[in-house]
Length: 135
Image 1 (spheres, rainbow, N blue to C red):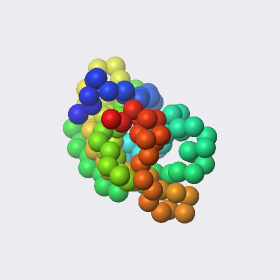
Image 2 (cartoon, rainbow, N blue to C red; image 1 turned 135 degrees about the vertical axis):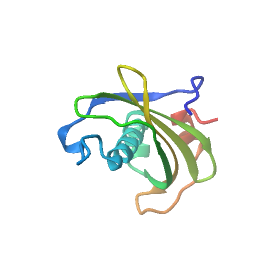
Image 3 (cartoon, one colour; image 1 turned 90 degrees about the vertical axis):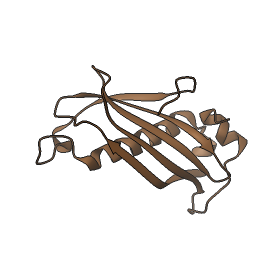
């Protein structure tokens, strides 16, 4: 899913007690949150201040495939990269792995839309594309 020839943004984290469900593994909704969180951190770390002050992103479509469960105390590696961009959307890929083994726990694809601070869709400019090195 991730293209090793393109930039990958990643973070590690530990599974926390509040993320565990009644089945003693990470609740499925938590994986969606992790995908959203890594996208947000990627934006905040890459975008210059003037763009962070004028542009936000909203998720339009999200598809997640669960492969294996994480449990309390697991060290998690969350990786993301952007894909194809159109006028107002771009693809984002996220892979969630056990950090120590590299076993894939979940993978996602999502379409995101750039919006102004009033929520109106805005075009993905060359400057926005360059932030994530979108071709």
